[in-house]
Length: 226
Image 1: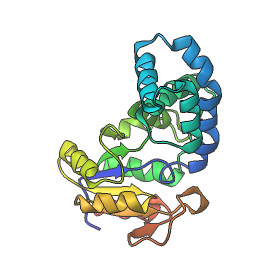
Image 2: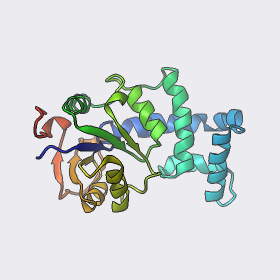
Image 3: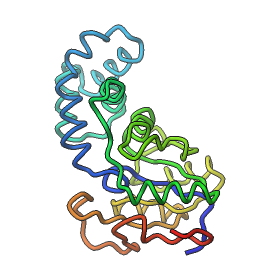
Image 4: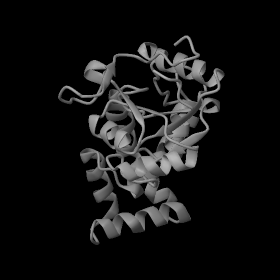
């Protein structure tokens, strides 16, 4: 394919196994949530997230609502904020180390070296994205990225979100994800799109109309050796 000016990548099922998020990060945050809120509830950012969660839960106990949303994998901003803060403690303590597929890390480094701008668009908050790539088993990958986007940009299944990202990055490029719906939305906004199929570590989905690869190593971008 023609060399894009920018590549934007999803995280879960694309650069990182879904199991790390579902089986490690979510339970870690759920277990520590009540104590974290008790200790940090007066922190302005924590208090704001709790107030937003209480409003979304229509007055119900916000901690109980947040725990339920973790179980349901709800994409709600206050949950993502608090999860990110809890995960930060785990990363900085060395308890959490994020697995990144070696093929993804190798390609991202190569594309960055070739002058292709790289960015992330994930439902996880921008701080949690940066923590994951900073504390990966492939080293600190954050210097490779020049853009970070989360649900503050908009829902990942809406084309308008990808138009906003394109505007921020100087135009559309190539979007990588395991989710066909996200790829559909990106294409509707003028992006090229490739689906990563990591087998059981990708989203379970019907056959996709999008070009599908099993690793970043299969994505050859013009003027690179990927």
